[in-house]
Image 1 (cartoon, rainbow, N blue to C red):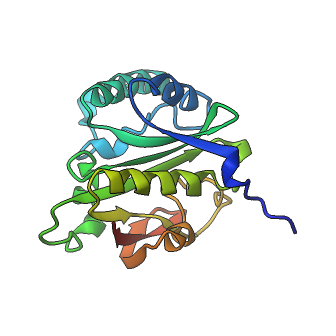
Image 2 (cartoon, rainbow, N blue to C red):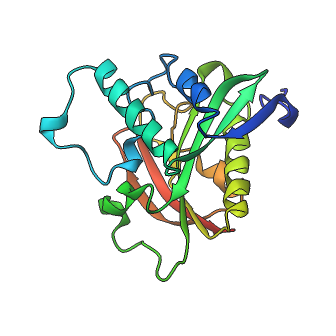
Length: 208
């Protein structure tokens, strides 16, 4: 059976910046389920208080897009956009612990935080348009994110990928990547990391 992965040359990558911001907006506005989040979830230490909840996905998406844009303007949001034939088709969010603090408040993370680490980086989210899934887009984004972390001085890098689906047919839609992808990138499992009613996850780390 031929490989489903497209050759690496089929994709290019660019860092999230004010210059590539329109591409981020285009990717996250294609009705793929991420339109309301705009990859803001892990930037917040915890869920917003009830009085700040908005009624519709459109309202939540508009608010999150404004807040994401402000983070980009201040250099507090990092990520990799993946392009096929000049069009954005994939995304990987990474950042320092201080930029993505929500993990620290997860029950599964208690007792697992590393001691005396100068720089702790996190890779939290992937997004790939449906026609391009299982074609190496996420792996391309991960490789570019790790190289960017290396250029920024490196450190300890964490990820929280899926280990297995517990029910349903969601296997091509993980927003955290897969364990096998991170193993290929040199990550080692640290501990189970909880999950949802659909999936289970693992904490993985490597040093760059």
